[in-house]
Length: 485
Length: 98
Ligand SMILES: [Zn+2]
View (cartoon, rainbow over the protein chains, first blue to last red):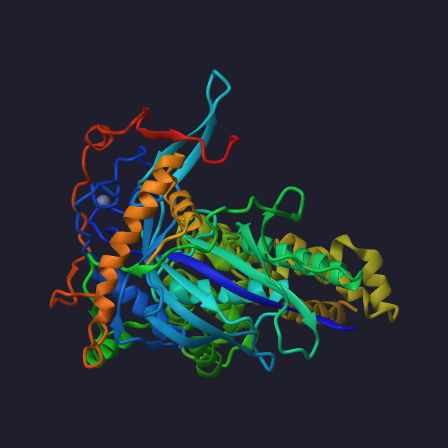
């Protein structure tokens, strides 16, 4: 029997607000001492009153709109109960049956391979604190609690079970992060825990409509581990069902070191969250006007920008995809293009940015924060290449130099003698020397081996350290060899 | 509205309360009568009343995203059963170190 895997992802994203969801403690606690960014509200002291962060709602709405969701007009918050020390109140304020946004999609793939992945819901909630587990001198194990993260605004984004492989799940998660970053909703940084991806995985006979028992996979800390963990889990489940076994519904954690998923301890309180409406927060009603206003704050999204760049600047679909990987690189490209001289093709700028510049920057998604090569300088360099002022090899050196120094490529080229020489009078000395010093090659050439001129051109290039224009050198050599024949 | 002994034990477990035999029975009786009391509400005809989760006529209470100073850490930890440096120290939840 043929089987297929069915995957749905639950993504938690911290919203990029300055203060927490229900109190005004700062969210800038990275590197701070434990429990220095807390107050009675986020530490769950009795008798306090949460007040909703207006900007968190704005960001959550942006995400809902960017994911093509319907924004639910009357929002309510609910208490989700579970006992764990990182949850100081004993419940998490979340949204249960009236989430902020429902029924959207995002598109993965490109160029004829597009697939829409459904978004079931997007809801607002709050983050938990962090626990460290220690062993004391007496051998007893205990836990240390830091509540700095408790109460940070969090979005839960639940996909439909529309994904079928680790690679697709990874593409979905990456696309989601790209969108979150485009609209300034979240840093999306997985290493820092600002974006967390959990998955539900099941297998079923191909063509069947029913879902098999699903296994929840946790602890995937990078996009690569999402892909690997899910592919591993799919293979594991296929092996079980093909050998006649049954999949048991459970939670498994990805073990990065061992590259396997392992069963996690069963939570004895599983799925008894006793949701009820949060009495401390009045309903939140989102008007049509408010929705339109937020829609206006949703920046041009990655796919739209990719298609526009490809069309407007006549660059390849691939280049457009790479350049719009982040809003910063797309902004950079457009700033360079705006500074290009007449007749310099944007395509050339795209090549230099996606090629050498990205290679130097090395960051994923072409993070250009370490580059000193401003759009002005990049446009200058591309103009020099287009005008034949420098050859490819020299341009590469100049780009690297300017990337680190932030100096003008033209000034650098002058200083380092890298400007191409096409002036015949400047080249004739080197041409004559090449002929004098290489009688054997000259004899070959005159004897009919015309390809020997390549060697002589190489000698001239060496003398001029590559700055001579090759076609000019060839013409000069041919003329000189014919004259002294 | 008679609660069963199992229901009381379940709720106690969810709340992480350890109850003695005597307490289970006492709470079973007490909770049963509390529930019965609240259940009187269901005798009312609410056909014409829209469902609500709120009884105060308020909506859209929000605050601008402007951080203010948090509390001093010593003040926040003052009532902690135990502290270690500036952490709350609690009983183990995992049973092993991380
Ligand atoms: Zn607080």
